[in-house]
Amino acid sequence: MRSLKLDTPKSLSQRVMQRLRQAIIDGEFALGAAISEEMVANSFGVSRTPVREAMGQLQAQGLVVIRPQVGSFVFTPSADDINALCTFRIALEPKAAELAYRHDRDGAIASMSEAIAAMEPAVTAKDNIAYGRADAAFHEALFAHCGNRYLAESYQLVSGRVAALRTNLTSPIDVRTRTSFDEHRRLLDLFGRGELAAFEELMTTHITNSGVVYAKALRVETLKAD
Image 1 (cartoon, rainbow, N blue to C red):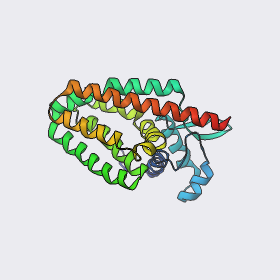
Image 2 (cartoon, rainbow, N blue to C red; image 1 turned 120 degrees about the vertical axis):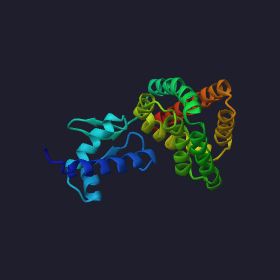
Image 3 (tube, rainbow, N blue to C red; image 1 turned 90 degrees about the horizontal axis):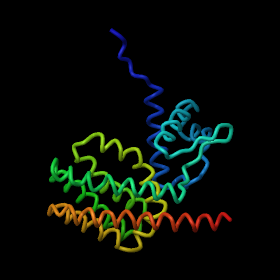
């Protein structure tokens, strides 16, 4: 029988990847920012090997761009990227909601309610990181309870980028207004009552509006850079 000994380096690189992923999502590294492998390795007290492996995993998730002989950078979306991402979400999220309602309605409602409960104090405190995390949890709940692993895995391909854009671009606005919070409460209400057509309509509007905010924020950043 082959040895079942755990591969420690892979476990270490996974931990490094998860910490870096959260740092990118939370805005500790700005969109487009350089990430020094040496700095990360020194900060974590590890060699550069697990850091390099972690960067490769983050690149596969679309969160990092590795430029040979240049360095590693947090992704920077283009207007086309944002449009494609929103189109992808509009196609997937209503379907996930439909399946979650049929497969595990009570579980989905519990998870979405928990996310909304975390949003309210974040809005009061104007904590865009906490709000972004709760917002992400709300949308991810649809896939966690949909009962279709292929649909869930498809969303995981973009969930990191969506979360990073949310924290960096929309959450600072969301914590200053209650529009997003009110939309999430309305989405939960529609889901709970099984009004899935109305849910899809509102979700489409919600995602589309997020895309508009992303695009505006990118134009502002581009003007600043110029």
